[in-house]
Figure 1 (cartoon, helix red, strand yellow):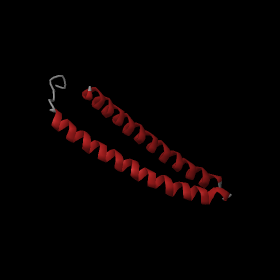
Figure 2 (cartoon, rainbow, N blue to C red):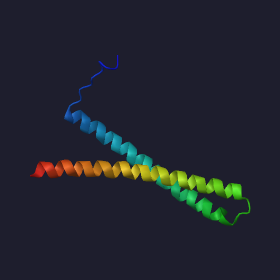
Figure 3 (tube, rainbow, N blue to C red):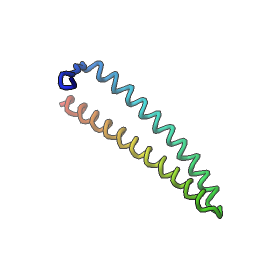
Figure 4 (cartoon, rainbow, N blue to C red):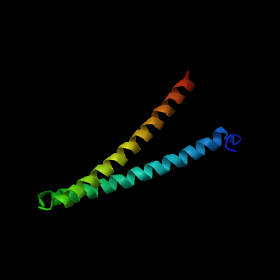
Length: 92
C-alpha cells in the first residue's frame, strides 16, 4: 500500500510548505530560548542551595533547553546553506 503512495508536489506548493515548516522551527527555537533564559536564571539562584537534587534538576532543564536550541539552529543553518547553494547555482 505504501509502495503505491507517490505524492507529486510542485515547486510552489513545496516552497509554501517549507516556509511554514521554517516558521514553526523559528517559534520552537524562540520558545526554548525563552525557557533557557528562565531555567538558567533559576539554576543560578539555586546554585548555592544545599539540596543537590533540586540543583541537578535545574541544570538538567538547562541542558534540555540547550539541546533543543542547538538542534533548531542546526536545522535553520542547514536550510540556510541549502538555499544559498540554490541561489548561487542559479546566479551563474
